[in-house]
Amino acid sequence: MAILYFEEAEVGKLRTAGPYLVSKEEIIEFARKYDPQPFHIDEEAAARSVFAGLTASGAHTFAIVISLLPRAQPYSLRILAGLGWDELRLPIPVRPADELDLDVAILEKRESKSNSDRGIVRNQIHLRNQKREIVLQCINTVLVARRPAES
Image (cartoon, rainbow, N blue to C red; front, side):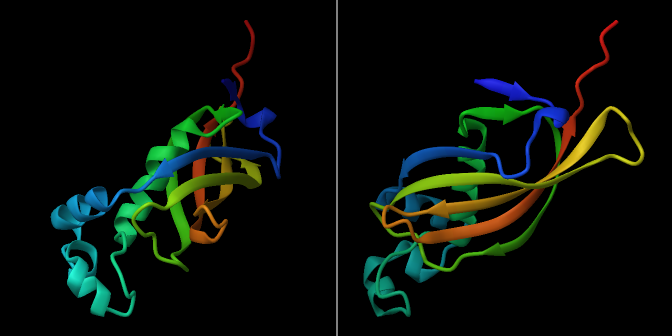
C-alpha cells in the first residue's frame, strides 16, 4: 500500500475498507462490557424497544470505524496524530449480520502554522451497511507528516 505525505494528499481522494461482518455475539459481548443497555444485550428486550431488535452500541459502531481506518485502500496517509472527531452521527442502527464498508474522503488540507514539517487533513468518513445506508458519518482531523527534505 502506498503511504502518502501531506503534499501528496489530494482533496476528494477516496480510501475504502471492508467489508466488516457484525455478529450478534460481537454486539452482545461489546455491549456487556461497554454499554449494557437492554436493546444491545437482550434480544427479547430489544424486540420491545424503539429499535424493534438487537442493535450495536454507538460506541461499538465507532470502534468498527477505528478498526477499519488502518486497512483503508489504496493508500494511507503518514499520520502523526489524531486531532479530533466532529459531527458524529448515527442515522441508522447496526444490526446482527450487517456487512459494513468504510469510505474516507479528504475534505481539506492546510499547512501547520506552528510546524513546517507537518500539515492538517480533514476527512469525511462514512460507514455504510450492505444496503449502502449510512450507519455512521463524521469528520476527523489528523496531523500528517510532510515529505522530509532530501539531504
